[in-house]
Image (cartoon, rainbow, N blue to C red; front, side, top):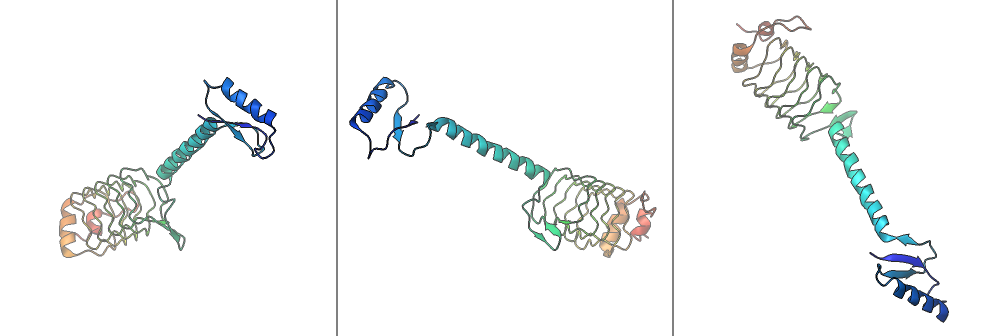
Length: 215
């Protein structure tokens, strides 16, 4: 550890001043080395200063970590009033009962993420990896789920009316009470979804199988 103490500047120091400094150095020979400082500032300890900097840095890291959990899209670009969270990994996080209309989850990784009860109206989930995600009671009307992987996802009582689901995968998904009114579907999608569909949507009152145009 190096300690800095105020001393007369070298270019103007008298022999007596230099001698006093040298004697002081010998007196504290068993202590940390002493350097003279000509800056005219008060004496300061380098080690406490360094510790203060380290503490400040640690605090900033902690704040950043907390912010990343609470606001995972904080650093995402904002364009046209919508926050773009493309490719942002949010697997396992809880976004239930929130208004998420201004967030685009395009190609996001959201395995087992909870969106239950949230407003996702018109949101882009294009190409999202949402295996076993929860959309219970969520509003997905007019949302874009195209090319997404929703294997094992829970859409119980979700409203998907008017949503785009081209090339989306729903293997093993739970569709009880979900509303698929006006959702464009291929024949093979209808055939598969009708095998696992049942119930009536609690909010819209629409029968799930009827909304899927099941035979």
